[in-house]
Image 1 (tube, one colour):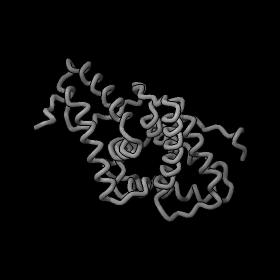
Image 2: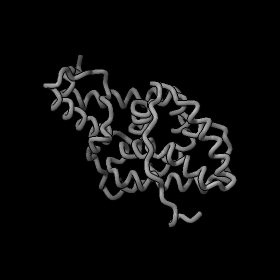
Image 3: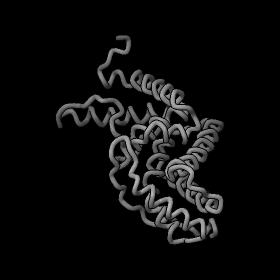
Length: 218
């Protein structure tokens, strides 16, 4: 299968997942599809892309702050999935393996940007707005403008985090992955991941204090 001829199919609607746990039936289906891809089944590969491209694009968009770049990284991710298929073994959840590939590509891209000093912190499109990071709700429809302002500020604050903190926050808060899976993706111990997220939350609360009405010194 040639890199230049493959194009991703139209995005499918993301299926809802229970908070804090992965849809095991989807993961089991993904493993079976991947085993067919390992045997060269192109249709199975296309189905795999349909199942997972939205979550990959959403995660990468939040990491890079740019939808166009996110689509490019997502395509690279799935091309690597195709190329790696002959060596695939279902020793972990499929999404752990998939996010590890995406993580490596995203980290490579952020390092390139850092060298060019062109890291983007543009907010996402309306469709990609993440959920509020902290458990602070903005009351009433009259406060919609404040909520939108908070979401933009949150996007920028997340984009400014160090890359591992940023990815950990996105995987935990937006993709609702369990700590253990984040550990596998980041290749870190559970205490290290919890410490990483604690530092990220501390920094985000500091950056968003004026929007959340918090006294950080308290």
